[in-house]
Length: 105
Length: 421
Image 1 (tube, each protein chain N blue to C red):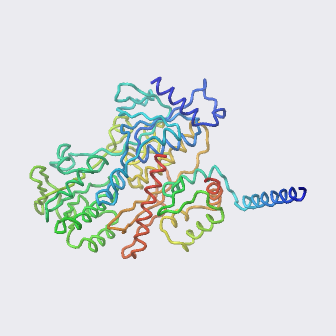
Image 2: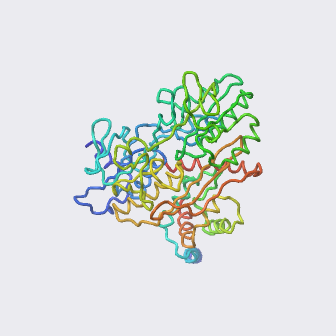
């Protein structure tokens, strides 16, 4: 019983530190700003999570989102619309969006 | 009016879980935003103001229709790529999910001094901030011989609804080997690539059922949006079927005769078996009855979309002079988010962020062959200035064109969900 509790505590500690580390990495991330900026995304990326012709971005992992945006920004990933959108996002904006989008279903 | 107020209050209480955090407006009254027009600008604005204010703002949307058919994608209906039902939407989502009060009436005029909208029923509704997003009206007399009566013979089909269905039945019923004449409008007008996507979709129809038919475009301009891309596609998919004659070549349309179906120009008189005449355009009537227009369109403050004539009125979409943005559903949706953020800020003190705008216009030129043009914009003191842009290229491979078409389907699902749910 005691060892189970210990494992539980340990895993809580582990996961909370992971979350903290993740959020700490998101320099300048502001969830309210992210929500505001996401208004531009959901004109095309269905807010209800549909995935037809345009990828689902709701609930996307922060690192996956950031990697994709940076790939569009550097034009390593093709799509003229996304290259244009990514190109005008700064670090604070990318991180705010990453934080917000990761939190919605 | 009491009925609307009570209903809206109940709606807001139901929609809000943070009723206690409402700001302390005098005597507990909730500020009211009235939105006129339930299209890409108005529906989006109503939704975002209601959604993001979480009950702190009472939002009423005035829209005559209970079912709204999008103008965008109506060309795909002409080409048999969509059925008409699939481009129709209702407002239940806005009412149920966000507590927006729906008033299905015509807004007749606005009294800016008293901050009131006069409705067709003879009642009025007061506002703290008003959003006007009425789309376009047609200037029938911009083409000699064209009129409101002639629209049943030569449909403009530039507002969605029965006109688009009429045009499709005329295209499908045209005699074998007949001539279809299209007159695109002069700038500025709703959906710059739209007339040419329409020609593509009509040509697609003819290829299937009337392959010897001809299409003559008597343009009022000398160039058009995505011209190289459209012309490449017409050559590739519909060789010999489409003839585009620019204004300089035909010297101007002197007169059209809806009973003889003749189009008189300096170059020649063209006889049509079916036709679509899209006249010049202006802001929807309510904008003209609100004192916010300057001539045919409404000047706005680029950073907020506020009318230059009245700081309590915002004008969105086609009716506004949002230079350098084109008049499109995507633009209106983008502008609505900027205005919503600004309106919430001024009524509840919420944070107002730097405005950013974007637009993309997709066009379908043939089965699985989509093209697009788009740009991002920022507000300057004088205008909504383009910061960067892109356009599809000629000679792109089939898989990219198919992906662009698929993307347009995703966009349609996305923007209509963004507007209506």
